Amino acid sequence: MKKLIIIASVVLVALASLPLIGNKIVESELSTKLKTLNSYGVQTKKEITHFKYLDTKKHYEFVVSDADKFIEYLSKFSNAQIAPYINKFLDGTTLGVDLKYSNIPISKAISVDIRPISLSKKAMDEIKNDDADFALYLEKFLKNGGLEYHIDYNVVNQEFNGHIKDIEESYTFASGQKLDARLQGSVFSGKGLLVAPEQIDSKTKSIYLDITNKTNHIKVDFQNINLLSSFESRTTYQTNMKMDSFSFDIDDDKTGKSKLNIQNPVLNFASDTKGIKAEFISKSSFEKLYLKTKQQELEISSFNYDVDLKDIDKDSFEELSKLLSLVKQDIDAKTSLKIQKLTQQLISRGFDLKVQDFSVKNMKINKTKDLEGITLKANIKLPQMALNSNTIRPMELLDKIDLDIFLQISKPMFVAITQSAPIIALSQGYAKEQGNDLVYNIKMKNSKISVNDKRVR
Image (tube, rainbow, N blue to C red; front, side):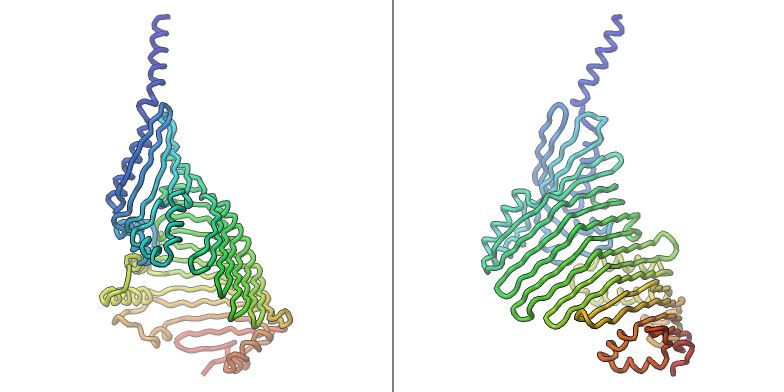
C-alpha cells in the first residue's frame, strides 16, 4: 500500500509539473521560425511573454528591415512577382503577432493573431503629403487591429483554420471623395507551412467597394467567393476559384452610366512540372454576362474556355520563371538579353497547344439583335527546332508548325463581324453551311494552308 501511495504521488507530481516544464514542441518551433525570419530581413522589435500555469501568451512586433531579403524568402515558395513599389513601401512596415498556446506538452495547437500595426515611414510620408487627415485615420485603423488574421494552427500535423476580421469602414477624403469598404465572412482552412501552405480552402461572403467623387460614382461587388488551391512545389500547383456574382457599376458625368454583371464565374488553373515536360491547364466559364453602356447593351450566356499547353521544356521554363521572379524594377540590357535568349530557347524546344473549347452559346445586342453562338477548337503543335541563333524567324515557325482549327460560327455573328472588318467576308467562299451556322476546318502544315480541304493560295 505504501509503494502504491509513493507511485501515485510521483505520478501526480509529474502531472502537476507538466505545465511548468512547458510545451517544448511549440517553443522549439517558434525558435526555429524566428531565426529564419531574422535571417531574411524581418527583425524582432518587441517580445513580451505572459506565462500562466496552463498556457502561455506571447506578443511580438516584427519590423521588415530588409524588404529585398524578405521578398527573396517569399519567392522560394511562389512564382508570383511582387511589384517594385511594394518592396519600397514594405521596408519599415511593422507587424503585430499575438500567440497563445497550452503548456501541456500533449497539446500541439497554437492560436495566432496577425495584423499590420504601422506602414513604413516612406509610405506614411507619401500619404500625409496627399491627405494628412487620412494618414491619421489609417494609423488609428491599423493600431486598432482593423486588418487582422486569426489562425488556429497545429504544429505537428500542420493543419490550420481561421478567419479575417470583418471590415466595414467609411471615409471622406479632403478632396471630397468618399470611400465605403466592406469585407464580410472570410474564413479559411488548410495544411502546410503558413507562409507556403500545401493546400488552402477559403470562402468570403462579400467584398464591396463604393467610391464617390465630384465626377463619378463607382461600385464594385463580389458575392460568395470560393477559392481552393493545392501546391506541391512553386511550379506544380492547382487553383480553382468560383463566385456567385461580380458586378461593376460606374456613373460618370461624361460617359454616363455603365454596368457589368457576371453570374457564376469560374476560373481554374493548373501547372505541372513533375515530369520531363511541363504542362499547364487553364479553364474559365460563366453562366451570364450583362454589359450596359450609354451606347448599347450586350448579353452573353454560357461562355466556356478550356486550354491545355503541354510538352513545354521544363528546364527552360523553370529557368525563365525564376529569372522573371527576381526582376524588381527596370530590366537592364543584360537581363533583357537573357530573358530573350531563354524565351527563344523555350520556343525552340517545341510545344503542344490545344484549345479544347472556346464557345459562347448565345450573344444578344440591345436585347433585339440575336447573334446566336460560336464554337472554336484548335490544336497547334510545334516540334523541337534547331536553334542556330538567338532569334527564331517567323518563316521558320510557319514552316515547322502544325495547325488544325475547327470553327463553327452563326451566320448572324459572322455578318456582325464582317461589318466591322469587311475583308473577313472573303472567307465565306471557303465555308460549309450547317443549318444557320458556317463551319471552317482550317489546317496548316509545311506552310501550306487549307480550309475545308480547299487550298488557300
